[in-house]
Length: 448
Image 1 (spheres, one colour):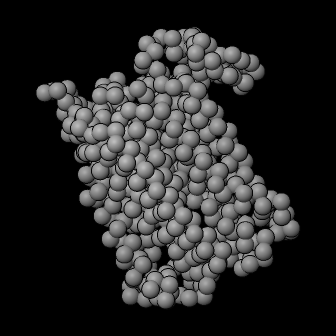
Image 2 (cartoon, helix red, strand yellow; image 1 turned 90 degrees about the vertical axis):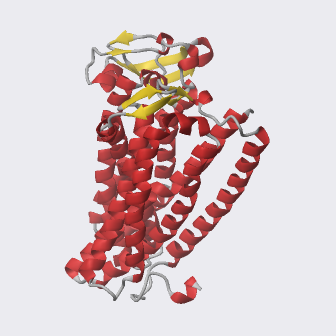
Image 3 (cartoon, helix red, strand yellow; image 1 turned 180 degrees about the horizontal axis):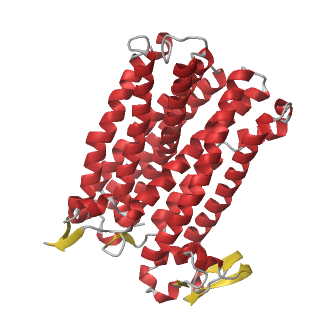
């Protein structure tokens, strides 16, 4: 292990850990805002209790997400100084806007929402949580536009040995970034939907607060189904964009070695990267891969042999991550459809097996979104900015192996502790269920 490998491992650990919290924040903020809107419109106290119960879990998750996100930007200056020097003029702009606009928006109004109960009108209070939800999603937009630029660099010139922005509009209208944003955000909505359904199912199995958790389950089920369909649609457009601008990633996703038109999709496929072929390739659908890549069965899909070995991503992890992501995503859409249908049946609570499945399924969307990030980031290798700057040229020259190794151990231990705290708090309040306190989000004695 050298400095480059350890730096990549550290960034992977911290980013993937941070991304445990981000998707739930994106989706649960919207669901909480919806519950409060229903309370304002109907005056039904059950919706107020739903707002406060799910809002409490949202706040716990949000706090951990903020803490783990702070280290991300510091790493660009510590472990990736060459990257920061080379592309900072471009990459820093969307991150600066995210910090000064989007994060400021959500941070301010989340404070108003927490401490504004009984101090502002019900409608004004509901507006604050919608602004929080808008702010969290706006943060995701700017971060994903920055990441989209790394995947498809636009609006820049190479001058004085670095990339300099010459078209800000091109950066913020980059189709790769927008498609990635839609795909990532709707995936986060699915995480939140299954989070709510899983906890609701756990309580329904115990006949706790049946009306409360049945309403929560039904709302989350519809939210999850609509989000799942949006994930599938945006994923299709994303695949087309990847095939167009990152052919090596697309080839690795489907383990394509030879360039060909009317390329088939093999349902059963075993890559053999060492010999640049597939050991098994059967159960084929003619033309399907070309259709996935270009919406044209006669489209030409480039194979990995078209590119030098040193410019290819690692095939097996990208291929496996993509296949598992698609498989789990399809399963989640199917479960969401069942979750919409089954509560309409008279004896819904008697279907204990289904409720247990929904409890067990709670971590599946978390796994799915992590696999998606592996596809996105491993598939871009060996480039940190595709076609412009290689990862090997991005690492800091002044850090030592001991420094990176020590900070990696430190981050791993710290994040492990934070993970335990987060799981403990979420499990504690989720199992406790809703209470009848309507004076604040968290009782004063528990804050103390």
